Length: 521
Image 1 (spheres, helix red, strand yellow):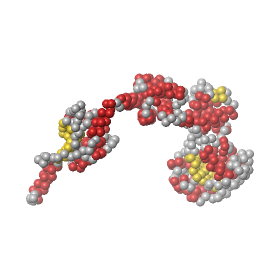
Image 2: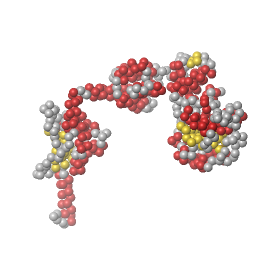
Image 3: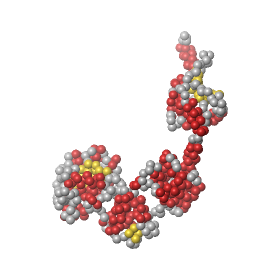
Image 4: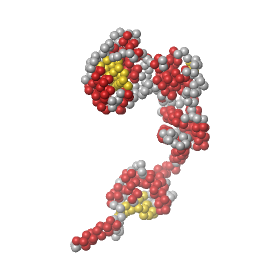
């Protein structure tokens, strides 16, 4: 018998990590207030089917104590259910019975008959999300008006695929991943019952590999036991469990934190050459970065935050703010998803190294700028963000000019040439992309006329373009972008060029007059 089946819980108290669900269900059993339909959702291997079978035994056990919810596993009814021989407890795999005909034959028609030996006929439908739409519709009628002797227990790993009409007619319970502490305690008890001992390191690897799934953890433990040794060590399970990359990932994190591109690339090459899965390695790096991020909040415990021994490896990283660490994690997650499709598996991570180190360099420069020099720059920014006023227009000019109020420049303000403005104007526009796409489109249609005394004159085609550029928020965005790009306060002089449109209109009117023999008055 498989180890997982051998150690499958046979009582509610033996189920681990789902106390919030077990408490509710056992109270319903004690008070005889069980529902006609349940929906168990959650990850695989966390106890959904086991709980369903225990519930089926509990509501059908004639020897259950009045103040207890635990079934008597020695009763004939409980033994039949445990051994899978009861004809009144029907387990259906929805993945292989997806059609409406299967549902009608195995469930709907069968539900009309009373149980043969038990008090309730129980239908346990596993992976219920695999049913077709028509099958769900057929099942819905029975769930709406169920016979008194029927109990449905639906189990799924993908709750979002279940129709709302089905969910609303069931009592829903959400199963969660099993915590590391609960998993460790459980695996130790299983190992003890099997008469073996296991290294803490191996135990940690099994728990990490299982990702909160008890069934996977038990299966891995069973494979480790197949070596025949009474004491399971890391050496004896090296064929089964991937080599720990904790030390290499710590070295890699330290390298990218210190902008040591060469060291980071060397570590990646060594990892790849040794045959370690790069995806698993990236997962370990992300996990350790997540721990560092949590340590910024001063939290420990079950979060897996770094210990004092690890802090020395991440001295530089711990000096970064949370957003910088989040940026590193984002880059790694994005590049990790490219590893499988890359012709060179290590290439996405190598690109990630360059991206992270480039961001670190930029952050260092920005941090260094927060000095008295930065204070001067902020002062310049405040000057340029003053309200804008329109200047008067020469009545002899055919284009209307809108002059922004230009603050008096200090003697040390750098004068920006028109050539430099032309060279960097595209960068100004691109810096506004995330703030206002419409503003970017407007500036792309504008024409740079001249730059004099740090006043940039641009020409726009229509008056409503001018109105948009004169909005306070728009002025602030543009002038902030100008200051960031040129490191010197600049202002805009906006020219509304109506000459072309006026000439065009006049020519069209003259053409119409000539065509129809009219006269313009």
